[in-house]
Length: 75
Image (cartoon, rainbow, N blue to C red):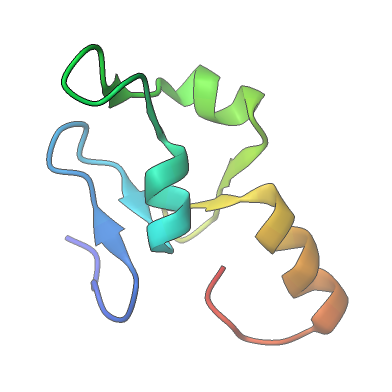
């Protein structure tokens, strides 16, 4: 089990780990109360999400910001 603190979270449906609420929300697709579901790994990669070495998914946009800033902010 990974340490969940700050905005880090784990999806209760697919059990994937996310480094931010934004990344978690990006992994969900469909309309609420109609066909809402988790994206597959392939679908997450297709929209630019990246699985980091520590096992947490991030959005590529935030990854690029982090690399440019050389900061240690959660993505």
